[in-house]
Image (tube, rainbow, N blue to C red; front, side):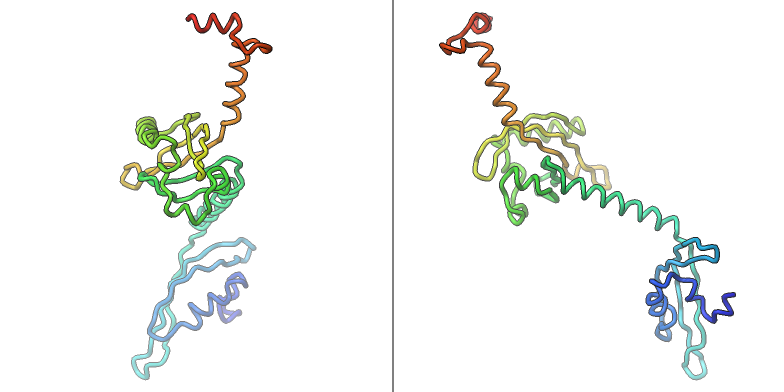
Length: 231
């Protein structure tokens, strides 16, 4: 059947005809080429091939003598790659659309990635993030060191409370869920995490606590308030 076609090009998915022609049919004399092709089998099943081709010249007149080539079935590898790409697309969608601030930094605090919610929470423009260090977002820079020691000891943290600072200097009460990232040699390369602003929640909690200890009309301590002070 392939001989009847005159060329096995027609086994390839039509979308890959140009790749076939460039890397196999039109290969320059005396050169080699490598490409990946999607083919359609006789039974309609799609497979992926890695094709190696070499164009040999005739020793007599230096014209094209013949093409040599071989193909490896790389369908399994391509399926894994496609699944990884799909997972990356899903992750990127969640990353970008999350209402919580998400970030990835190096161990030194330089930002590798961040979402729109992070920019909105801290008030920075995307261009400013290239020179911003994570320690600049802490109200107390010493808290950065404590955070790093804790997460490196535990590997991850949840509901870790921090007082962070917006670009305009405004303080925020935040909780952080974060984990360490590792390099190929097993060393810690950085951190990734999610930040949620709980400033309003903390304000309400403090207001309710104050109300539980004071008289609503006079503002003075009530019985519970005096009892709490005496302890």
